[in-house]
Length: 168
Image (tube, rainbow, N blue to C red; front, side):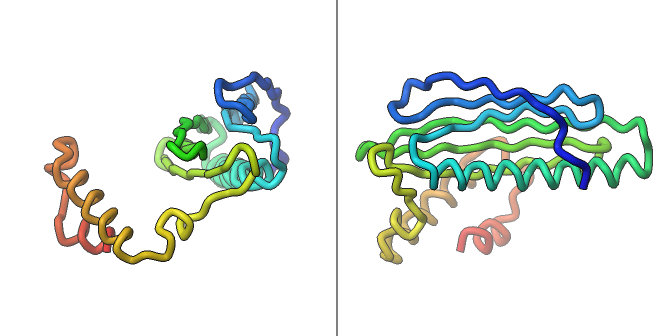
C-alpha cells in the first residue's frame, strides 16, 4: 500500500463542550482528500475515530494503486464529513459520512457513527441503546420500515421482501 500522502490538519473549537473539529486535507495529485472529524478530550474516543479514518485512507490508497496499474490518468477523491447529534441525556453521536471515488467506477459511501459521553468519555454501544430489550429493537424495526416505505425517493427502487429481510 502506498504511503499516505502528506497532509495538513487544522483544528477549531466546536460549539459542543469537550470536542474540537479537525480538518485534514491533502492536495496530493494522485490521492487528494478532505477529512473532517471530531476530537474529544478522551483518548479512547479519539483512538476509535482515528482507527476508522486510517482504515478508510488505507483502503482508498490501495484502490488507487490498483486503479493506477490499469490507467495512470485516473482521478480519485476521498471526503469524510460529520454531523453532531446531541441527545437529551447529554451524550453525543457523531455521524461520519465517507465518500470516495476511484477510477470512475469504484464509488463508496459509508456511514459510521461514534457515540460519547463528553464528561466521562464513555462510548455508548448499540447494546446500551437497546438495554438488551428485544422490544426496543422491534419498535425501531417498525420505525425504520415505515420511514423507508414512505420515502418517495425510494418508491421505484424498493423490493419490500428485501427491505423486510434487511430490517429483520
